[in-house]
Amino acid sequence: MKIIVLIPLIIIIGCILTTGCVGQIKNTTENVTAVTTINTFAPLSNLTNVTNLTNVTNLTNTTVTSGLKGPLRVSIGGWDADLPVFIDNKSVGIATHDKPLDLMVNEGNHTVRICAGTMCKEEIVTIQFGKQRLVDFEEWLIRDVEFAKPTARIVGYYPSGDQYTISVEFINPSTKDLIIQAEVTAGYTYIEPRSNNRVGSVAQGIVSANVKSGSRVMETLYLDLASGYSYSHSIPVISSVTTR
Image (cartoon, rainbow, N blue to C red; front, top):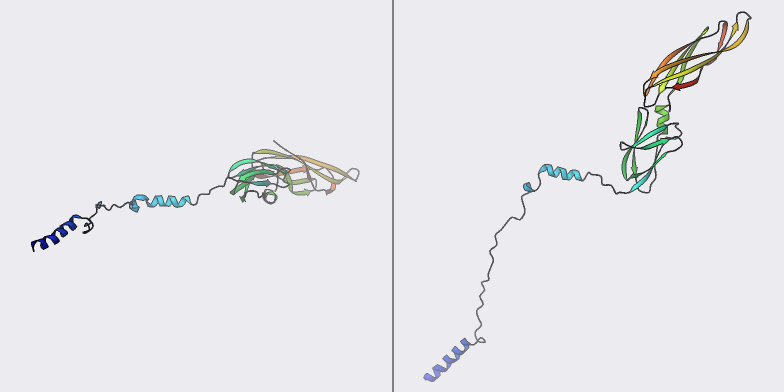
């Protein structure tokens, strides 16, 4: 009886000692590293204030040039003068009546300005690579400037008996003050009292004015005619103009 009880006890102890009979209990508790929650993003107020945001927005309005250039021609047509040309307020050369100014300009919008004396005209032009642009100022010069060089002209004359009254306008479109002098000639015929014959003659006179840059001045010239009667007056003309 004691032998029968010992046999099962021996078997049970043997199973406990062997790994095949009873599975090892696995320690399910793992080494867990403690994680402390940290806010890895700084508050918005610490990143950028309102002023800086405005500055960032303004950067989007900056014109970025491509580095490419396009051809531009500036012309004054048949206007008889040498006129300075400016691009974006920078002097770039001279345009003349027989030679327009040819340039290579960075791509983008540019202000082209030309000046005749104290009068200037601006045009906005968009430059593109490989595309010819032309800015012609001739129409403006003819319409608004009218005169290319310092000059004088007769704007009125009033013959009365043996005298001419002639109104002369002096024009100075240049960039400096000038003294402009004009010689005026007027032809006429009259009856000579002694012979009672009609004869022809010419009256001449000189008139001058100090004219500031970009200005006009009016002067009056009086021409005395030879003594006689029954005068026939011709239209007076300016025979020469000089400046100094």
